[in-house]
Length: 300
Image (cartoon, rainbow, N blue to C red; front, side, top):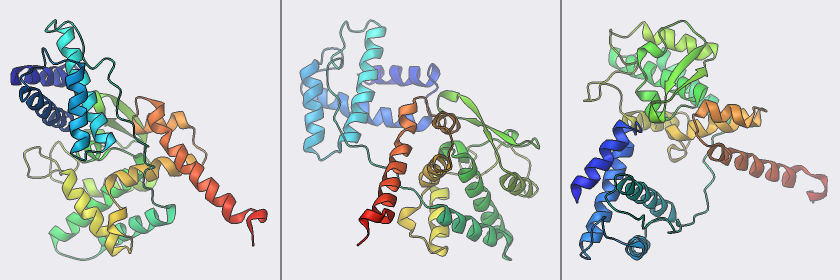
């Protein structure tokens, strides 16, 4: 049945513009699901609702979290919808299968002071003397950090930025997000100046953050590693700092400053505003703590 999975993945890539990481995740999830069915003498073409439910039960028995199980069910559901759309089977066994419930965790967020400490440390390293390789790496990290906090981009969007997106002396940058959808995000003067200085050090090429790997641009893992190293040097726990944490900080700090939720949704590239609303819960928690700490009736 691997050809059915391959056909589905091809459709996701060609018609829906799914990213490589998404395709890889779907391949792993569906291969595991098809293997589970095969072990019970079933295939995706004849497996019923009970088989899907038993598969989810097996994931629970393995200790998989509710969120991970829900993600797998989402992949399986889309797979079966694809089979129905192509008339490979007449029913969808996932149609009335309930998704595993999980309490959505609040995103980790750094304070404004902590982000400023990271930026100051990165800028100082970029301006410090060192070998050409050390200076190039420090400047790249500083520009990555400035861009991430200034725009709230996903790390995959950031590392794969094409130089053409920032070549013009503009106050905006074009970001290509999920499904190849483009959005326009403003740049502040500080970030624009950092990019301009960085561009002057680069050899000609298509990517803003070139690398020698197969994709031609910096890997997310390398950026995450360098960012944690910077956090340690800045006196911030490395476990608290990751690229997505800076994205969370961007959104939370904007909302705390009075930005409209719809504007933040657009800047982040969220298709559904419910995804953006998680950041309002962060603010709710901060407000609750503020009242408990400073309200006169709560004072001893």
